[in-house]
Amino acid sequence: MRTIYLDNNATTAVDPQVVEAMMPFLVEYYGNPSSMHEFGGNVANAIEKAREQVASSLGATHPTEIVFTSCGTESDNTAIRSALGSRKNRHRLITTRVEHPAVLTLARHLERDGYKVTYLPVDGDGNVSLDLLEEEMDEDVALVSMMAANNETGVIFPVEKAGRIAHEHGALFHTDAVQTMGKVALDLGGGNIDLLSISGHKVHAPKGVGALYVRRGCRFRPFLLGGHQERGRRGGTENVPGIVALGKAAQLSQAHMDEEGTRVRALRDRLEKSLLAMPDTRLNGDVDRRLPGTTNISFKNVEGEALLLMLDRKGICASSGSACTSGTLEPSHVLRAMGVPFHFAHGSLRFSLCRVNTDEEVDSVIEALPPIIERLREISLFKD
Image 1 (cartoon, rainbow, N blue to C red):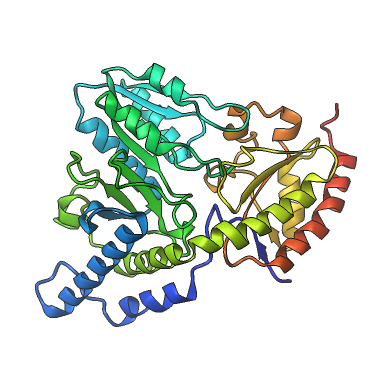
Image 2 (cartoon, one colour):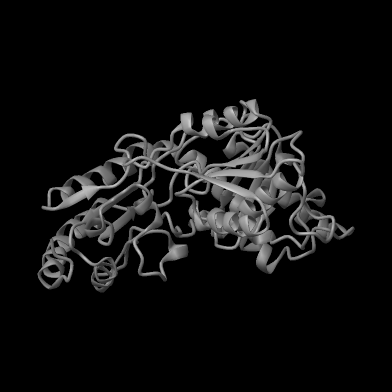
């Protein structure tokens, strides 16, 4: 049975061109890039090429603004801790209720350490209010951290405008842009974004590599202390194959961005239209301000975990929320923040499509899902 993978907000298949680019650095060019000899120097050159590729794909003004990390979570932790550490006279962090656990878990930890954290609400469509952000700003805010797009609903946040508000009050601005790379262009040239996180496995690179954009002139305190790697900003021997892979994947994602906005969006819309034609369904998230490949749909009186298991038996991979919280039986914190009713929130599915998905795969989901929903409603304990 062929697997139909529609969970690309969680992780993507590694692009064959990315595999081709990284393989020599696993078996042939294995020198340490910090070494003085030519064998290591050639590897160091490959890292700098990848840095240029990532910087170009993000629209950064200079390659040195890119710091390679192990993942988006490390990038988020580094950005937030650096911002707070460089603003020791300020003790507040502002974020949103719908951030990825990489940010929310750290925020709760910081509260225990004495920081004051404000969690901005979202409306029923998953949008955050910049007026509320403006109201919360004061001279004690060190950092505003707001995701560029939500990983569950795909809703896009106005991060450039939010960054401008933060700067007007002397605060730094960070965005978790893990979901937007290769899908939505952000304006780094405007100078409103100080720190930006990305992760390789969302753009067809392997797991275990990410990057952090640090705007030139932004004060920075490293999170991982050790050697001189990454110009002293991130200690530890570099994951060269992963970094090379991320560079190639970033280059390819930039080249395929138009396809994400046209063909992938059309696939998503066709799937969405068919599923929403079923009774007692609802779309979660702003209809217009969304990532082109993401849809989050709730099915009333359906138990989400059972739904995922029955889809899995058909070879269909979807998600009920963030892959980083899939071990819990609680409804998504994102949908709860949006006020989605319990009988809908428990039966939500996130489908996230990308350029490797096909019309045939969408047809298979449209055929397989209605009888599953009908069966689960017949045996459901969730009744009006």
